[in-house]
Length: 238
Image 1 (spheres, rainbow, N blue to C red):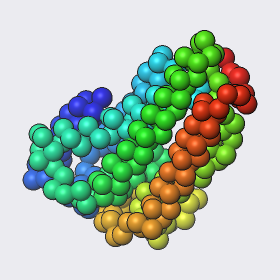
Image 2 (image 1 turned 60 degrees about the horizontal axis):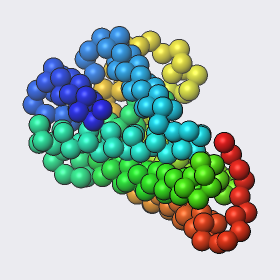
Image 3 (image 1 turned 180 degrees about the vertical axis):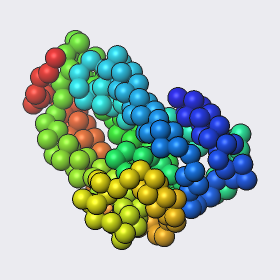
Image 4 (image 1 turned 120 degrees about the vertical axis):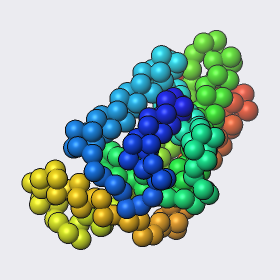
């Protein structure tokens, strides 16, 4: 998946950025090309969801496989770009990270850190689920993870908002939300082509990461306590 993603980007950069990818964006292609790229990203997510469903038996396990596959895909996307194009120049090179629901931008190191966090969470979930199956004869027992989901959702929202904030702030300096909905495609792409990343808020990113890591620590401690005791005070799921 990482190579497929990088291959597509290599083709696009050869066509639109023959001298190397830089901001501001050269959005000179037809709107249907941009729409195709957005749909392609959505299709990639659907593929990852399909793989996770086939690998996992219960929701939380499927979630773990999804974030693991997503993280590996993201990391190796940059690995292959570096091997083939010798890009990015550094971990702090800015990149367009995602396009749904708006353009995500940030230094390359940011999604890599986030991907490593996702891998850590996935390992914890899969490890304790497999341990539960071994102990309880194919029955998956999990601790109460309500707080885990709350922390994951809050941390994820903070990180996503941080990734799209700079771009959205630039757009909203020119048009209101209602005006953007009615804006002709050519005008919108023309405006986006003027966008230059200004600043990445590392403090907000750090806050989101701390919340995600807190969720991982919470899950690890609860699961470790359960499986190290003789009495399993668990909620049984099939």
